[in-house]
Every structure is written in structure tokens, then in C-alpha cells.
Image (cartoon, rainbow over all chains, first blue to last red; front, side, top):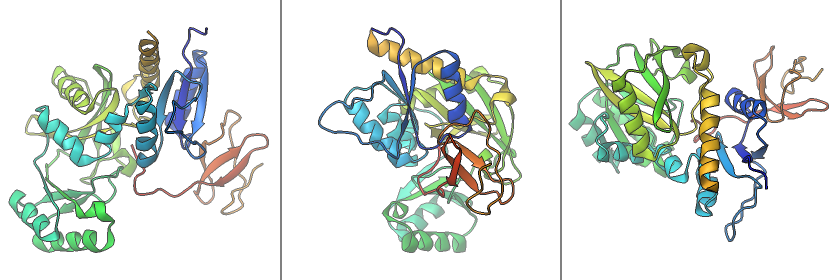
Length: 287
Length: 54
């Protein structure tokens, strides 16, 4: 029996991150199977026979990741991350509730289910507020709402044009950032590195043009990032952290993290740390 | 040399390219997916959808 685990990498497209992960696996001589989620057919009645000991999920589409992981986890195929983590992190409301229940500081949030109640929620928090779709990434459709007229327009657009998920109104207090936010990369029990994301725009995602700089991982930052990671189920996650008057607040948790701009910036070999964790999960599952 | 399916420009693809890799057309900037390696074939990469991301 082969003592070394075989790693399946479930992906849609080989972006820079996936290529780095595949190169890391190859450099270690790890047997690797690329699983293209566009051609994948998973059975529900029996354990999927993928011929791997662990699956590293790197899908670009949340729905694909979520439901593939639900079947794999349901049949006890070890995965990184788990279905639980994908379910929680893929939904901003579920993430918020985990953070709150685990006493991880986060921006105040209100949820409403009708346009009228959404406007009440907005005015309860006070302008400006941020409205976000429950599901989505890269800062898409995230709106800063400065006044009543803007709120009415956005709520109407969401009500008329959006699918049903857009009629669940997620309203958050606006945190005035110092021109940057922090992204902490957590692998297991450690924040392995972090970056500042600078932008003139209030949305600081590097996917939207934010500039990355190394951020020292202080004990305080490590603590809040690891606590946030554990709150959502643990594994390999990227924590978006806001600073407000010396206080740290967790804004979001990403479960299929992008890191291409953060390796040179931090000097940390992020894909190597990720593969260490994946191999560890496979080994623990075998024992 | 493979051609961009959008604008017909020549696209250089690295020798270490893998199937599924995303490259950009140097002329029109279209995102292209490497669909075959030998010989290299390119197709327009799908547009981002609502639940794409991290």
C-alpha cells in the first residue's frame, strides 16, 4: 500500500494559485489528480471513487464547491476545506452569526426580508451603511449607502432585479478604514502571514485594484484571525480585518483564498504551508 | 503559435502551461483558457458569474 497520500485538486480553472499549488505538489513528488469540476459526476448513493486520499477544493464557483463538498464530506472523503466551512464562509450572514456566537468582533449587522424593513434597518444603523449580497465575492455588488435616497434606489433595484437571495437584505455599519484593511492568511492554528490592502476606494480588494503590502502578524492579529477561522470551522482561510481606532473587526472569511499577490509581499511560501496542511489532513484521516 | 479566438492575435503560451490554465491575449486582453496542450488550443474563458470568488 502506498504510504504517501494521493491528493485530488478539485478545480475549475488553473489560475496562478492553482498552478502554484500543483507545482508545490509536484516538487514534493506527491501523487496528484486534477479533478475538473466541469466534467465531474458525483454519486450520492455510495462513496465517490476518486482514487484520492484527500481533496483540496479550489473551485471558482461557490455553488459547485459547496455541493461537491456536501457529497464528499457526506461520504467521509477528507476535504480541505470542509463542507461546513464552505457553507458558512460562502454566506455572509452565516459567517456573521458564527463570528458573533464565538465573540469575534465584527461590524454591527442587521438583516431584513422586505424592502420596507430593509430601509428601517438602514436607518437604525445610521448612514453611511454597507449593503452586501449574501453570496458573492471580490467586492461585487457591495454598496456604500450614504443617504435615504440611495438606500431606496438600491433596495428597489435588489427587489426588482435580483434573484430571491437579493431580497434578504444584509446591512452593515460602515467602518471608516484608514485607507486600508488587513487580510490574514490562516492555515490550521496559525496566521502564517498577512497583508495590508491599500486603496483610495473604500473597497480594498486586490481583485479590485487594491495594493498589497506586508502586514506584521502581531499576537493580537493572530488571535483574532485564528479565532475567526475556528468560528467558521477551521482549515485554510483568509480573514478580512478592519481597523477602527485600534480595534480589529473581522469583516469576512474566505474559504478558497487567493494569494498570488501575497507571497512575494510577505516572503511566506503560502502554497507550501497549504500543502503541508492538506497532507496532514490526509495522514490524520488514514490513521 | 496559437491564435486568440477573439481577435486572432498570436498568443505565446509557456512551455509549462497546463490544461485549464488561464492566459491573457496580449492584444485584446481577453481571458483565454488553455484547452489542449499538444498542440496548444485556446478558448475564451467563461465570464465571471454571480457566485464566483474566494
